[in-house]
Image 1: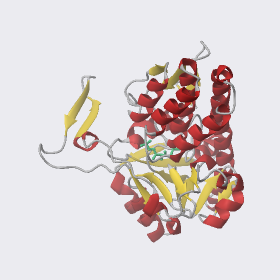
Image 2 (image 1 turned 30 degrees about the vertical axis):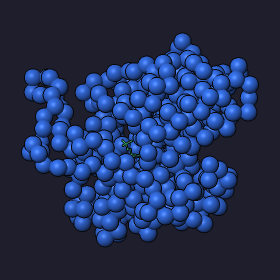
Image 3 (image 1 turned 135 degrees about the vertical axis):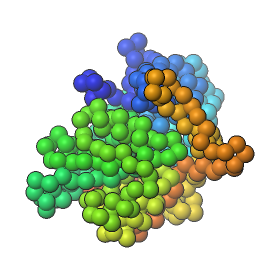
Image 4 (image 1 turned 180 degrees about the horizontal axis):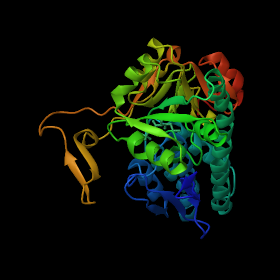
Length: 368
Ligand SMILES: CSC[C@@H](O)[C@@H](O)C(=O)COP(=O)(O)O
């Protein structure tokens, strides 16, 4: 997608052919800084410290992390060490484990001297596949937006989204935003309600930034606003991303997604989840019970960073000293509250049968 008129992806192989470039998302929206990752450790830290974030991008970064590791030590021990270092970087997005499993499956059977080259090739494939998948999601989700647009000719289609499931969270296009970008390109009038997404503000900082740079009309709203908008007919549909979808269709996503789904259900607003197939975890049968929920530093709750009127970046504390805080990073929306799952293979019912029928090849790798 575009930044100041120039096309960017969130991650890429640098021109030297081996190091990895990525947009440092911790600095947005205030500064556009590109980081260079040169080791497996760099990749693990980038994921852990959220220089990169969003489920598909976490997976892509881990894949390049394995490739960087193979340059350093391509022995069986080196392969295991890299896998072990990367897999613990963040716990909830299953794409991390999926990408590492893909890399290990490609690399383990081959001669260590061939592993570095093969690792870059497989990582490149994972990255390209993400873009292709998101194009598929774009086309399938577009049909939903078109159907709403057809019912209100000349009027704006209002989409509510939570967190950042945009191109910054993937390699390009995004998942939740992919149908929005395509609808915008096709000349459909779309407007996005962007939940700010406390405590890290991925909506206010990242989704608003990328929609703005691409020219998509949007409005940032405090997290608690969605229910009110839905009650007043100001949301036509909600589309969110996800970090892991259980085999039964339960959806794990950024904290607060569940409350939006409840409000949507109460107001008859369609609530869609956009996901690439690597986000499905067929090994988890009950999302609420079994998806691990990351708990992050309380500093994300107590402190906020922003630009002062005279242009400086400053971090301020907004919670009284001594007040305990909790920071659950994700929640799980039960399948019964989800209208449909927008995947690269169509819009599916959020249940075991539909997921298994659409992605039978993923079931075989579920237990690994
Ligand atoms: C296409 S990204 C889907 C999810 O990863 C996204 O909605 C989300 O919750 C990201 O959380 P984050 O903690 O910023 O990695």
